Length: 209
Image (cartoon, rainbow, N blue to C red; front, side, top):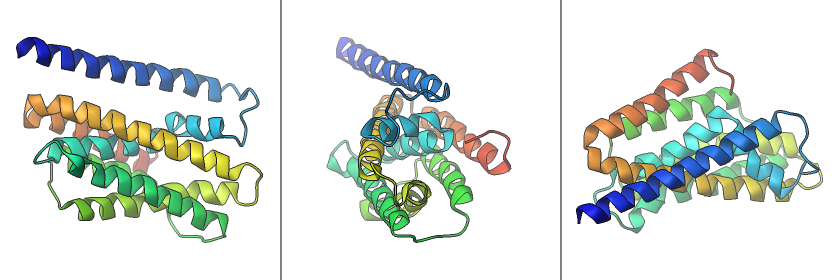
């Protein structure tokens, strides 16, 4: 049993390290100003969530909260990730048709703070409420990009890539959260608290999104 547990922990660690390496490489590549022809493509949409601390933190936090607060490891873990991904898509579609909401960027930063705190305290909510909470924030994440892409060629491919990356980041958060369940409340407190701290820094303008 102990060998199986150690193997599972190493598998989670390898997956998370691989994701971190991918994020670092794509972030550096995106900031060179050379997208290798991926502009307004599925690839550019897929890369984008990895290059912004606000989107990256919020999407990982959704999976983390789902895992550390779950009563059992079953399909109910997917309520919040599914809610976020679907409402992000809805927000992008609203942006495409010209819908505008105030305080989009502050709400994105607030999502990092709030979801990080939810993970830190391992607050357990009914699945549909969890989906609603993160989904409300996800609308702003999607709207920010929908507004930028409205009327541009390739916008559907960009959003498809972004939603795909969102699902991957949710999965990374779930993996991290499942690993942290073995540490009791302290692992969730430190990880969620760190994400919440990032939210405070984003809201205060101390770090760039």
